[in-house]
Length: 361
Ligand code: KG4
Ligand code: ZN
Image (cartoon, rainbow, N blue to C red; front, top):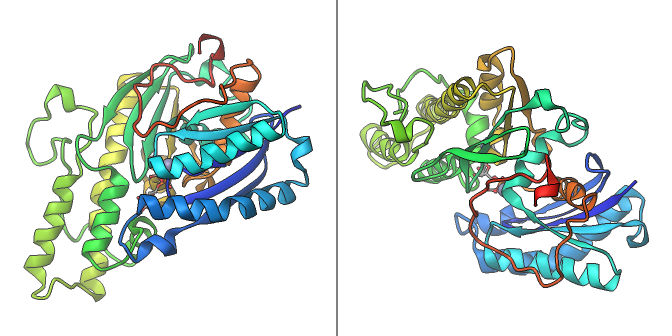
C-alpha cells in the first residue's frame, strides 16, 4: 500500500491531494485564485506564483487533515513540473522538493497533460488501464491551454493525432465570455447561460469539419481551429448591437449557439477519430470536459461498443489528485525523479504514456 502526496500549481489552482495506490482519492484540496485574476481578465503568471506561495501551506494541511494522515504516513511526493506557467510551476516544484528532501521521500515529476488523461480513471478506474481490451484509448484533452487528440495503444505508445492550430477550446469560451462582458473564466458562465437559450438559433462556423461545404485538407482531418468562431462572434455582436452589448434572449441564444458550435466540433472530431482508429475507449478530460452540453452530446453520439470515460467534474479542472494518482505508476516501477529536476513550460512530444508500461520510461 502506498500513499502519495500530490502538488499542483501549473496555472491558477493551488492543490494538494493524498491518493492511495493510484486510484483511491483520500483528499483533494483545491484553492482557486480565479477571483484574484478575474479583475485582469485572465491569469497573470507572476500573480499566480505569489498566490501559490501563500496558499500552499494551508492547502497541504487541509489535504493531510482531510485524508487523516501526517507527512510520516506519506511514501512519495509527486508534483506537476510542466507544462504550465513557469513562475507558477516553480513555486510548486520547489515546495515539493523541500518536502521530499526534509522528509527523505522520493520525488516524482509529473506531466500535467498526461495527468489530465489519468484523471478519468480516478476513484473507480482501477484495473481499466491494465486491461488489454481497453485499448486503443482515444483521449480528448480539452482545457484552457490544450485541445488535443491522443491515441494510446496497449503498449503505452502514444501518438498525437489532432491538435488545435490556433486557440484552445477553453480559450475560445473564455474569450467569448470576455467579449460578451460575462467575466472570467468563461467556461462555467457560458455553460450556465447556454441552458437558457436556443442552440439552433444562430449558426456559428464549425471550422475544419467540412460543414460549410469546404473540403478539409487531409492533414487537418483531426485538427481543430477555434479562432474563426471567435471572430464570427465579434461580427455577430457588432451586427446585432450598436453598443457591443447583448442581453436577454438575444444573449442567451448567442451563448447557446456559440457553445454548440465549439462542442459540436469537439464531439464530431473525437468520434470520427475513434471510428477511424478503432478505439476501444474514449477519454474526455481537462477543464472544458466540465461542460454539460459536451458531456451529454459525447455520451449520446459515442458508438455504443466504445467505453466512454468522462473525467468526473471535480477532476476535470486542475487538481493534485490526478498528479498523485499518476505518480503511483512511476513509484511502483522505481521510476522516481532526481531532486534536481527542472520545470518545463511547453508540452513535449508525447510518444509513451507512463500508466501502461512504465518499464520503458
Ligand atoms: O484544465 P483547466 O483547469 O486548466 C488548464 O489546464 O487550462 O481548464 C480551464 C478551462 C478554462 O478555459 C475554463 O473556461 C474551462 O476550462 N471550463 C469550462 C467549464 N469549466 C471550466 N468550459 C466549459 N464549460 C465548463 N463548465
Ligand atoms: Zn490543466
